[in-house]
Structure formats: C-alpha cells, structure tokens
Length: 166
Image (cartoon, rainbow, N blue to C red; front, side):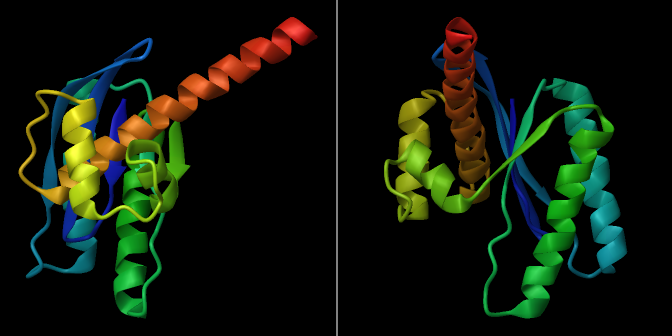
C-alpha cells in the first residue's frame, strides 16, 4: 500500500505491507523537484519518479492526503498541481486511490486530529517498528498509508456484516 504526502517541492512517499492487522514498512522517502526549473518540468519530474516507484513496488492500493488550503493562494495552487500528478500516476497504473484529510490521518495514527508533525512521526515509528525516515514528509506519507490500512480494514468488516444481514 502506497501513501503519498504531495508537494511541488517535496512529495513524501511510504509503502507498507498489510497482513491482517499487521503493518510492515517496505520503504519510504521523498521526491524533490528542482525549484530552478519551470512548474511543468517539476510536474513531469514528479510524475516520472512516481511512475518509477509504482513500477518498482507494484502496490495494490494508494492513498493521498487531501489539499491543505492556506493563506498563500499561489502556494495552494502549486500544491494542487502536485496533488493532481500524485492522483494521476497511480490511476494511470490501474491502482485505486483513496483520499484522506490531514485531520483524519492524524486521528487514525495519533488519536487526535490536532497532532503535531513530531507526534505523527513518533507514532509512525511505534506503529511501524524498523521504519527508517529522515524527513517529516516521508513520515507523513507512511501515516497516510497507515490511515488507509485502518479505514480499509474497518470498511471490509462493515461490508461483511452487511452481507450477513442481507
């Protein structure tokens, strides 16, 4: 399962294995684009790196953090561009993509939607022993993947219960 924390300058990625309730870190890192080149070139570079990751790891599902709107409209728009690429790359590979608000991710991993980045990183280390990440963007991407694993598991339980009632 692939988790993505998109950004034009830095996109965090994290891949976890899911077996029942057991989560295993399989890899994580960041994709950085060169701020000296044009936005279209940065988006192309992001797409190429995401496509390479998808081909290398072949995740069955992907999850992405929803856009955070801030006071700087231009920065929000650039984040939206990167998010579009992050949604498109797995979709082109035939991989279903789920989306989660940042508060939902924090709630699933830390227990509160108002958690700090440091709290998220600490809980990711606890939930994924052995996970090695150097940047908060990679920890956030792993948190997105953890959130999706938890939500997917719950959704499957509800669907099974609905089938039994039907």
